Length: 389
View 1: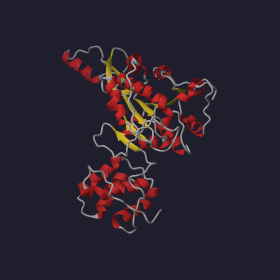
View 2: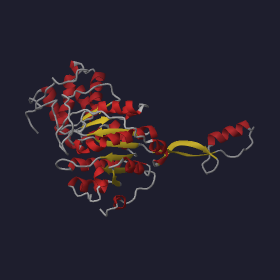
View 3: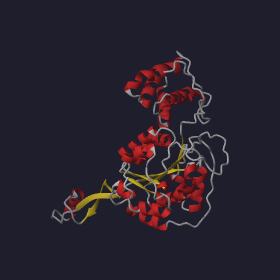
């Protein structure tokens, strides 16, 4: 561990009081040293310190341990960082604090707090699978493409799970004791026909993760329209997009007017057609408990070419975590539209065992057909691709 760490509290977001700068800076310091700290944990840390007073540094330490929950094997490192930061036993410095280009930023349109953004520059296109962040904006024309069939049928096409709630039924073997007792009381003790119930079945959540990097530029507009139809076709759809940043689009796409919804979503995304950090942004998604809960038991469809830069370790780790949490994990890639396509890149080979489906994402028609088939069991991935992978 670097003993000459450095801490810069000057870059605290403007909406926070200055007194919270050391607390906010400690959360940043932990993230810089590889601790998985979600934004909610940083907020909980500051709230815990406020709740305790604090009357001593021990209060702050206990708040930090309770909210950040460091792993036992990293507790020594955690304590050393705490001593360095709050007691000044070693000078702490984070070079380039606030200018970290490798750490994906998260943007949730359901939150009113705006994150700091760099200068926006117009780009007509992005470099193919570049890891460099390039910010740009896009506007979508009204092409009249309607996906009414997808919107109408998707709700009943998703796989279902059993709910804890029950509904009345005329057949079955589960007795509804409460309703049966009411019937007996209303009939002055006569035994009426038994009242039965069964567990309700509800559609699973659909989580769409759209790659908006430069290599996907030709397809992102269609993907966004499919996502709009999915959000309105089922009330249990969540949509995020990722390039070098992670942005939640669900609230914007819930606007009833499609053109307004697409315009709102387009305005939220700041890294259209820019670089690619698939593994980093997907891990950033999983690091936020509120977001990772969307993947639990859900049907997760990632629309991406999966062309990761550099080592695919992070991407493989993210896909394994999605596969462990989701009901079904699918990758729709436009590369599969080419008959010569083979998953021969290192990243694709690494994630292939984690996938339930590897499908063609090069056309709206093919993507719609696949989404409407999610209620059926996932075929073997070799069958789905049809190419003997």
